[in-house]
Image (cartoon, rainbow, N blue to C red):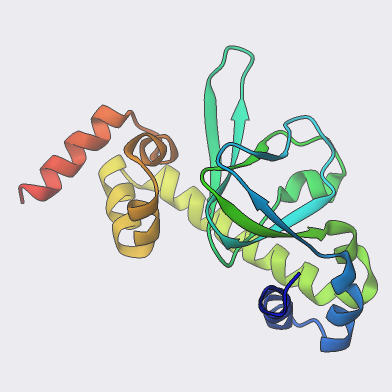
Length: 190
């Protein structure tokens, strides 16, 4: 891993209240990985061992049914850590697959670090972030109309609008791509 990549992951964990020397001690366990679009980092049904800090590109967590349908749980962007909290906490097989939407560069981080006492501040910070995010997502999906969801993404997550295609956005919002096109036309005609 080059010094710039190491500095980036170092700064990420500093923000999660991990001491400098503890991060330095763990850094040999971090691994820089380049991945292509559609590469799979965690297969559905596997036990999760790693989280992926995104340096560039977009990852997603999606569930694939036996009938071939796909349900996107989440998208992860530069500067975010991608892993499945439930599978991590319960040590159970992943319900979702984590894969790349495009060429991406990530740093693989062993999740067992977060179980060490000296990493407890990061674990608590990540859990707090996830809880708040889940609450916001419930409001997003349960209390907003599809048009309000799209307007919310326009205002608060413009990188989603510019980085994801209509099919990906529509799936996340919970509507068909045709409905999303209608919403966009309605908004543009106002």
